[in-house]
Each structure stands twice: as C-alpha cells, then as structure tokens.
Amino acid sequence: MPRILLPTPLRPYVDGAATVEVEGSTVGTALGALVERHPALRKHLYDDAGKVRSFVNLYKNDEDVRYLEKDETRLSADDMLSIVPSIAGGADLSNEEIRRYSRHLIMPEVGVDGQKKLKAARVLAIGAGGLGSPLAVYLAAAGIGTIGLVDFDVVDDSNLQRQILYGASDVGRPKLQAAAERLRDINPNVTIVPHETRLTSENALEIFRDFDVVADGTDNFPTRYLVNDACVLTGKPNVYASIFRFEGQASVFWAEKGPCYRCLYSEPPPPGLVPSCAEGGVLGILPGLLGVIQATETIKLVLGSGDSLVGRLLLVDALAMRFRELKLRKNPDCVVCGPNPTVTKLIDYEAFCGIPQEATMAAATAGGIPEISVQDLKSLRDRGEDFVLVDVREPHEFAICSLPDSVKIPLGTLPQNLNKLSTADEIVVHCKMGGRSAKAVRLLQEAGFKKVRNLAGGIDRWAAEVEPGMPRY
Ligand SMILES: [Zn+2]
Image (cartoon, rainbow, N blue to C red; front, side, top):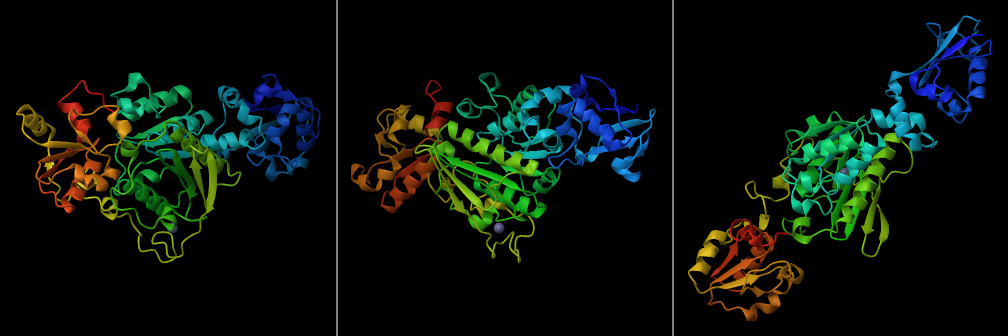
C-alpha cells in the first residue's frame, strides 16, 4: 500500500503518526481513504466544495502531482505521497499553536488557512495607550504574527484607569518596553516590533512600508492626519477609532476601496476647540470598547471576511449605550485620495493643524497671553500680596484638589460671572494644565481686564513643583 507523509501540524489528527498507509491506487483515492479513516483531517485538506485546499501541495515521491496527472496520478505500493503546505500560504502552525488557536481552527470562517493568514499578517498600531492597549492585547492573543507599535511615552499612574497593557509595577517604565513584555507573555509566537519614536512626516512612510494594516490609536489631530495621508500614499488600510468622554467613533479608511479620513474631515478643528482626553476626560472602558472594534476590523481585513467598516462611520454612545452608523462617501475633491490630489507627499501636520512648533502642551497659551510660573505664584502668596486667584475648572475637579481662597468659576460660566471680578484687581487664572485658563485670560482681556495672567502648567504643575502632597489627576 502507498504511504502518505503528513506535515507536523496535521499529525495530531492521525494520532501523531508521521506516515499513514492507505488503500488507493491514485492520489485522489488515497487521500479519500485517509480522510475517511481520519475525518478531522478533512477540513484541513479540502475546502467546502470538496476541492483540495490551495495551500496544500501534493508530491508523489519528489514530483508535484499538478505536473503529473493530478488526482488521477497513479500510486504503487512503494510510492510515498507527501502533503506539503505551501510557504506562500503562511508559515506552518506548530502543535503548540494548534492547541493555542483551537477555538479559531474549529470555526470555518478562520480555520487553518485563516490562522495562517493571521500568522503571516503584519499590523502596525500607532499609539500604545487607551486604544492601542486592548487592540494589541487582542491582536497578540489572536495570533497576528507581527505587531508593530509606535509610542515614545512612559507609563504614568493616570494611564492605568484604561491602558490595560500596563500594571502598577510598570509606572515610570517606557511604554513599549512594558508592552512588548506583556504581549510576549500573552503569546510568545508573536514578533513585536517596537518603534520608540514620535511618528513624523520624516519616518512614517519608512515605518508603514513593512506592514499590511495600520491601526490609528492616536490622541491628537496632527498625527491623525499624518497617519491618514501616509496610509493613502502607501495604499494601506487605516483602521481608525477616536474617543472622548463617553463617545467614540470607528471606521476603516482605505482609499483604494472607499473614503479616507480627509474625505470625512477635510480640515482639523482650530487648536483648543476640541478638548483632549487629558483635559476633558474619558470613561476608562470606552477605549476598551473602541480598541476592540479596531482589533475586530483588523482581523477581518486580514482574513478577508465579513463586511468591514469601509464607507461607514460607527458612532458609539456608551452613556446611552447606542451604536449608530453613518454612510461615508468618497469626496471627489479630496486633496489626498481624490483624482487630482494636491497632497502627494507628507506635509508639516503641526502647521496644518495650526499648532506652533514650540508649543507642546496647550496651543492656546501661545499668542501673547501673559503668564506666571508656579514659583512666582508661590512667592506672591508667601509675600502676602494682594491678588485674586480664579480657578476655571469644573466643580468635580475642584473636589479633587484646589488652592485655598481661589474664586471658582468654571470656564463655561465665566462670561456671565464677570461681575464677580474687578478690573482693578491683579488676577491669576488657573485650570488643570493651562489650556482652559489661557482661554479665560483672553476672554477677560477682551472684557477689559488688563492685569490678568495665566498660571503656566496649571494646578498640575503646582502639585508637581510646589506642593508635592497635593493629589494629581
Ligand atoms: Zn479622501
């Protein structure tokens, strides 16, 4: 009887044997006899239509049967029929991987073919923060073979409320170092490619080149436009999500198949109009929800199955627990993915978003707003000088920490509370980090206040540099 030689991943289905003797005088009847005796093998060798799967190559001794008589190729008693999974179908799965991914392998939508696609896939996550954490955790667990991460941050206490890649023992460590360790622990089969750098117009195309799918988990507009444009220019799908407080958005921008981010938002909002999560807050679970949607879309793209979010914007309202969907259209005048693009290479995205080069924290502090440092404020207080301190944060923030004797007027209510302040007084305005108070200073200046200054760095810097016992948030 001819023998069939099985590759390692298929041996568990034949009680671990490397070769099996079968009845059969042709390749077709021998394989048929094999799966008859070991039915679990069938789905690995044949597709639903009963055809031998494309990644399975069959050799009679050292000859590929496709170049002999295919199924009809005759086998004699001392012939060896080898089952050789093709390299192009992705690397083989080891026995450990077969056990690890068994819940995938038994689903027809994934199966061995799909798992090999996942293993061969290279996914780049921009940002290893709130969105990047659940995204990377699930991609690693699912067996995405290569995961690139771009981030240059250090783990902070305030990250732990949502960035589930990190634990208390990671505080102070570079995020990518901690992330790579955690991801390798989840799945040692995954190759982690850390890019410990800020994504810039200079390095984006070079970094993107090695990946099939890019997942955008950034928290700022310059990087979001940069990721979009770099994806359009390199032809990669951009799995997008963004979050704020209780709300999120998700889509897949892929210029070859549908709209890009610029088709949806051709221009960024003016700096300071849309508060960041650091200023406005975010429900810790929300990036989990949206990051998992990104992971799902990424895996569907790799498997080539299901309906992706291309051309659809998913809106998530976690407070109402409502998911809505908007139809997105490709903008024929899109400057980057339209037929006559004017953006044909990466530009200066900080300038495009109206952010001056040197301003790092709050863009609104630029533009001639008078400031006072936390040290100078301390001297004013120590000397007992006469001035009014105005806190423009929200009431729930006052409850966390505040400076004694401050007048508490949330920024949104400032215009109708100007009568509580006098233009004759020296005024120092503060918020958490200096962004909102800068707007307050401008508002007061426009209302005729001349002696008004912004506390640079806000109460957060005060806590960091002057009053170490004060809680920071
Ligand atoms: Zn576009």
